[in-house]
Amino acid sequence: MALELDDLRAAVAAGVLSEPQAARLIVLGQSRAGQRAGMALDDEPFELFRGFAEIFVSVGIVLLFSGIMVFAGILDTASLPAVAAALAWVFGIYFIRKRRMALPSIVLTIAYALGAGGMLWLILDLQPERLPEGRGTLVLFCLMGLAGLAVWYRAFKVPFTMLLAGVMGAALVYLLVDAVRPYNDLRGLEHLFDLRSGSGLAIATLIFGLIAFAAGLLFDMRDPHRLGRWSASGFWLHILAAPALVNTIALTAYNTGGLAGNLWLAVALVAVSVLALVIDRRSFLTAGFGYVGVLVAWAIQAGDNAGSFALLLLILGAFLTFMGTFWTQMRARLMRALPEFPGKRSLPPYTEF
Image (cartoon, rainbow, N blue to C red; front, top):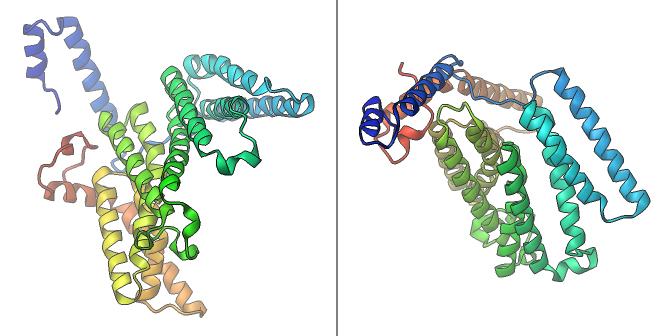
C-alpha cells in the first residue's frame, strides 16, 4: 500500500514521525518519482560497469586473486582460501562501500564466494570419493555457503550476491529432492525436465524456480521504481528463476506430443508472456524464446531447406523486435485491463496511453 501525503501528516499528528522526518520522506519520494520519470519509458535498469576505470581495477583484482590461487597450489596450504576471502572483504570496504564501483563489486563478490567456499570445503573435508555418500555434508556446505553470502550481502549490499546465493540455493534444493526421489531412475534425457515422467530433477527445478521467482518478486515490490539495490537484486534472481520455470513447464507441455503438445506449449508461452509483462521482466520471455522457435517451426512446417530456415529467422526476428518495440504499450494496456489484485500497486508503474 502506497503512503500518501495525508498519511504522513497523520503520522506527524500522532507523534509517529517528527516534522523533519516527514519532510525528508516527502523529498525522498519526490526525488525517486522524478528519477523514474526521467528514465526512458521502456527502460529496465541494468548496470554492469560505469566506465573503463572499473574494468581496469577489475582486471587488477582478477590478476591478484589468480596469483593467490596459484600460490595456494604451490604451497599446498589450506589457509589461502581464507586469506582470499578476508582480502576480498578488505577490498570491498574500499571499492564497494567507499568508491561504489559496480564491476569490481561483482569481481570481489565472486572472489569472496570462491575463498569462503574453498575454506568451507576444506573444513568439512569434502573429498571427491566421499561425495556420493556425503549428501548430508553437502547440504551443510550449501547452508553454510548461503549464510556466508547473506553476511556479505548485509555488509556490502551487492545485488550480484543474489545470483550466487541462487546457485547455492538450487544445489540445496536438488540435494534435498534427490534424497526423496533420486535422479538415477530416469528413462532418458528427454525426461530430465518433464514433470509427467515424475523426474526428481524436474520437480527440483520447478521448486527452485518458484522459490527464486517469489524471492525476486519480493525484492521488486520493495523497489517498484527500480532505482535501488532491491530491484537489482531481484533482477539476478529472475535470471535464475526464468529458465528454471519456463524450461520445465514448456518442455513438459511440448513432450505431450503431436497437436496437443504444441497447443499446450502455445498456452504455456502465452501465460509466460503475460507474466513477463505484468512483472515487467523481459528475462522470462527471453528464457522461452527457444520454445517460440519450436512452435513457429511446427506452425510453418519448417524443413531442412534454406528457405524454411530463413522464414523461421524472419518470423522470430519480427516477433522479438515487435515485443521490444511495443513492450511498454502492451504492458500499459494489460495492466489497465487487469482487475485489482494483491501487489498490483507495488509493481513497476505503467504509462497511460
